[in-house]
Image 1 (cartoon, rainbow, N blue to C red):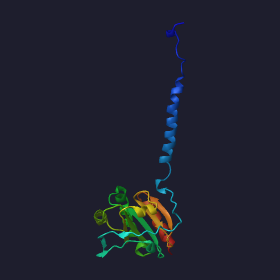
Image 2: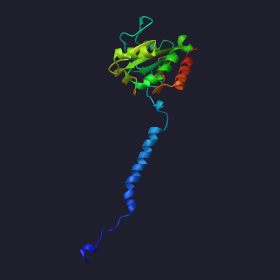
Image 3: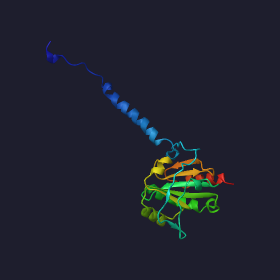
Length: 198
């Protein structure tokens, strides 16, 4: 028998399809994890715990009614009021999308009556840009703390901007919304905050 007549054993075409099938199965598992569930419901280890005691500087040069807008600290978060803390930045496109809902929250009865306070947490931003952002879109915040380096945001467990936290009258974090607020999410958080203070 000559060498030319000897052929290699034939492999099944299914053998070549196995890597492709494994890849497709893994891709399906990853896609399900990415696209299922609510992205705003990212778990936070801080829910139910006191808000981290950070010291934020006021946003330099920001004024409201011809008065400097103060920063906020832990003492401001535990004065018998519910507090909504919104993490924002002027360079953040989704922050522009949610901003009208924050302005509407600031005009709500709960905020105007002093039951709920809305404060801003300016993240990794230049003061001039943040002032321009709030000047153009309106300033819904009674206080704004500046976190230029982003260190305080790490303590708060911030994944990115925007994020919004609900702080109870005792200074504990009760809820967290990741991503831009829409009308429904803003209304839900405001109602939850108002219900905390009778």
